[in-house]
Length: 384
Image 1 (cartoon, helix red, strand yellow):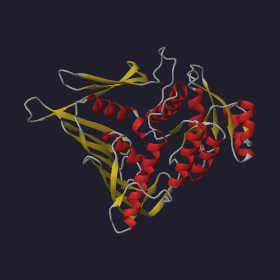
Image 2: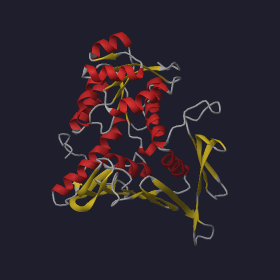
Image 3: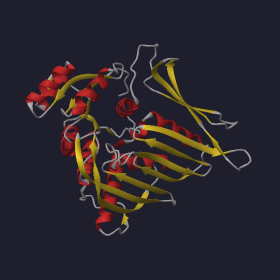
């Protein structure tokens, strides 16, 4: 039933994001959600997490459900356990926010989706890349119609696997249907250098992934990734792009320092007209992000705005999240809205499954010598 009271949330799992991200995030949204407990498979880890977040901790899921009556479970576990624990949470009766990937086998994802349908539970997946403010203002501009139809989109080291696929699909529209995938995956040696994530120095091997995705209606997605894309001075480039009927958008980035070049056709049709993006803060010296504003130069639609849903109501009395935290919080509120309204999340399990399926198809195509792979895949396929 629709409700405006905070929904009761339990964190299912004790992975690192449970502590530094999900716990503080839930506690910063008291009007929407209330953290009532945590669950873990190991007592020591569950106790430590519960004590840090000042909520009861459990290793018995039935007892958690009985004593705390959570409505939403945020599943945050070790990477390989996503599918197993996600299914357990749904079968326990929870609406769930699942970490990425939704599952490693498509059949595991299907089991989660089927269990949710039987129990009339909602599923959202923490695919936050397209929810970050810079991506949201681009998607708002595309939806305004200023660019016309987007023909081709690119992920060029903007994100790995399903994250990168999700970014490029967002420009085409999540309703665009992929039909065929062609991929190439190769390993290459790299000169010795520092790995920021592993804190090592020495020679490294990178895995490059390249894919071409053909969509119904003729649209194309072009995907590039390297396994050292997050922590290597050798591979500093980060970009996503789209080519549209009346203009284009290009992210130009060195690591996380990115600029957006968005352009429409100038009057006369002989030059690009660049869109100016503005970050609007709650104070002239900073504070929380209030909105992203695009100054288009178009006389009929000169200003396009995306408002941060987490902007402070009272100046100085709100969270000052960075872009990724805003994106993850958007995933959670998508689930909250679906539970309250009875509708569907804005991304959801089927989209997450499709992003995983495309990622798998790129790798399967490479294994078969670059042969095109038709979608949908066999549900028994597994990530490699």
